[in-house]
Amino acid sequence: MPFVHLLAPKLGVMALFCCSVGVACLLGDPSYALADDKSAINGDGRGAPNQETTLAVRFSGVELIGNSLYSDQRLTRLIASDMAKPLTFTDVQALAARIETYYRKNGYDLARVIVPEQAFREGKALELVVLEGRLGTIEIRGNTRYPDRYIIDTLETSGLERTRAFSLGDVERGLALINRRSGVEVSSTLRPGEVQGATDLVVDVDEQSRITGALEANNYGSENSGKYRLVPALSLLNATGHGDQLDILGMKSLGDGDAYFGYLGYETPINAEGTKAHVYGFSGNVAIGQDFRVLEIEGDSEGWGVGLSHDVVVSSQSIVNVGAWLEGQDLEQSMLGITTSKDRVRKVRLGVSIDSTDLQGRTLLSLDVHQGLGDRLGGMDDDALLSSRSYARADNDFTKLTFDLARLQRLNERWLVVPRLYGQYAFDSLVAGEQWAVGGFHSVLGHPASAFSGDSGYTASVEGRYSLLGEDRYQLIVRADHGRVFVRQPYLGQADDRDISGAGLGLRAQPWESLELRVDYGVPIGSETGDDAYWYGQASYRF
Image (cartoon, rainbow, N blue to C red; front, top):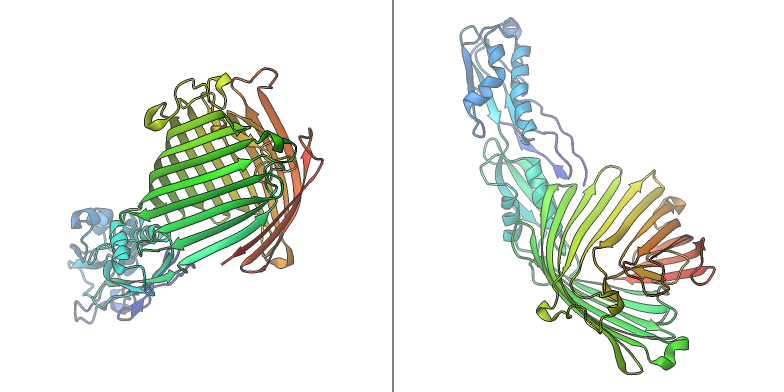
């Protein structure tokens, strides 16, 4: 949203003030006529002296008009040291500016302190009018499915209250909370209120399409379970008018092997303060093909999760989200029809994430702690014999930390660089579904998907995108990755840590807004874990 910088002209006409990010500001500046005297101050927002008022005058005191946020005593202390000496009109303007600065330092960006028309003579009290920027009416435009009351409730939660002074920060925090909800995007404008000294807030609502989706085809899968995959996705935005969202995601492999996956998730705001409730469930199956088909190796998985999250808006450019989840996952593997392992994970996950934007780019950080609940809620027994890593005594009594740090850095008009570091640290041996894996397009280029896995691990990558033809629709992509895993209790002959590196070159094209094409060529750096080079392709259509 744009910056709007406007300055205050003369009394009796509209005054425009310097505004913060995303808010166009228009404030009515009333005309004050508090004295009818030939020596009265006339003119602009701080008064303008005539020839009779250019000399220094000793005032008997100061009379403040219009202040409610701060007492007369507090504001008078700001200028008390100067009131004991003779003051020129320029000095009086400086005193008004000092009080105005005090308001603005405390977040009241719309506050103005003016010198009204008055007698300017020895022994008279100096009159200063404080316009604190009180909120008038709130007008909401453009919404048909998202009710006015949700917008007003959120703005009031952020500190806006009719007839009281407010700051641009209050407005921005409220708008940021609303923009975190599904299917709605809001912006605002300030305009002069009908009541003298008040400012009205106009909120424009852009409601997105209720149904969005995508169909993607790629070759990011495993050779044994199906390299080529179809990935359909569908989202219902603001389906009930509460800013909620329903997500449906699927995946089906093609070719050798067989794999499918289905996901259903729903989230909805539950108050005006930024709290949401979440629930999800998923189910999937993998059947190994190629040389292992005769062994009838299969894996079935299903899981669920319920959680609460809360947004804390630090500013319009910085949002902190905290969340608490209860999650479960069952993973069963079999060979020749006989169950070889059965993991039942039940855990609590607590997390915090930060999304911060500045003039040069954007920083994303998330930290989560995962705590297994043992045999509670149907979790697997301690030292379960059917654990996928029973030899390491891995079960549902575990603790691990996960992290993800990324920076989107704009170097110039054409170059965007994205460094990223993400991974996990485990305090205990983990079952297969909780381990960290490296390798593949979404991890380390030039290696098979999930080439290695371990209890702890990390992936570090840096990707550079160069805009071709002077626009982001066509980009040249260069990328380098490194991944490493650590095993707490390796089996006989297994290394306790492995690392791989890779690099690649790619091209991304978006010939139409709804169609995206991408091709990448990746090679291993150092040791090889599969082929000496890999081609990756993706086509995605969005609607």
